[in-house]
Image (cartoon, rainbow, N blue to C red; front, side, top):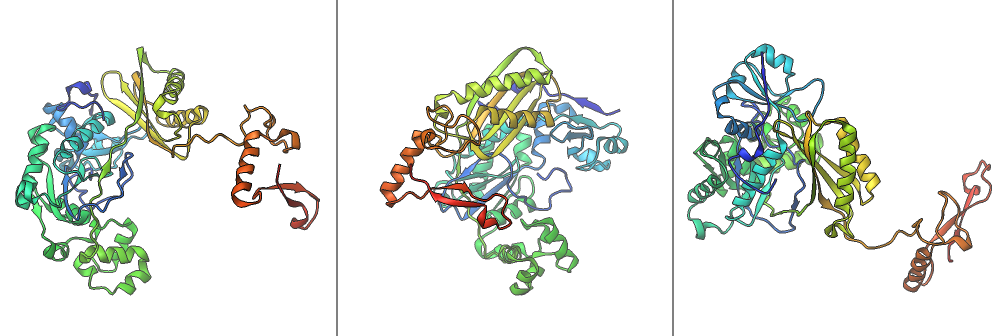
Length: 464
């Protein structure tokens, strides 16, 4: 029977921070697009020479560091989230040899490998490892760009030759820095690729081997990329499948095709793919701006497993977070919830709002919906709330504020001469001073039953 293991406490991690991959041996096909974690790239020109550090199955390797007795067994990491049909997220080498693959149902994986050990994911532990790695690497170069995938990061290396020497010595200096945060087995398994642009360095890291970095000079970039499969291109999987069906398996075959034909078949993606394959497009490494989130937390006197209790705690955290002085005048764009679970492990979920908001009712509805869709797998010991991204600072009052004297008290009530809010009057007065006239209009109902739409309503100038 498979063994389902919980996690030890996060305090037993091989590193300490305040907070915060292709998933199998057979999934090293190519880069994916960013989608994880709120990071903002600074509007700078960036670094043309890029160093890519990549640790495959980053999350599973962290679990094996915390539980070294599992290193010689078949281990699989379950996908994040709670559902009836759980799937496999990452697998160890022994489990892969037994036939376990990423995306399989747990029942299928267990039938192929009865001795499989299943691990629950611990997102807070993984994010803390990423933050520790970025903090250490920022001491070497000011240009650090995290990827959407944990365990993959790009470093800008322009101008570092005078400090660290040749490219080979620069790479080894970076790898040596990782010993500050990771144990020796993780650093030894890290792959490194140095090349022009993020795409070239990523391909170089995929083709590198542990302890043997791949360094590609500028004049050999096109030659280096030629034998690589088209699956390494950062394009949609459908485009890769079409290229393979057309008999274009490698980037060298792709650059033989005329650009007009690729544009006719794939549009702008075809032009971009040809530029990447030929080495003409060099995407620089952009500097990463570390956001300063607003974080509030709440500890339960006893483990809380009822969803109503978690909802009440969430409302309390929202009230405390919105009252922070650092939040005043700013709306919220991204909210993140973290929970420390009973018997170890963690649970996390994140909500990105379509429009920034600072309304507690709206934020609470969104977060409670996320929590109901994927609730914590076990009882919760503590709950934390983070505001990680914010809207533009603004102190402008609502033109139709119901709390203001003279504002509309009933939703949908038409504006009359005596019920126009003073804030709206002030806004119209400022617009008239700037433009010379009032640019606002009001809709007046004329003949709502008319068959001609233009006769149903009319626009009149609004000048209170």
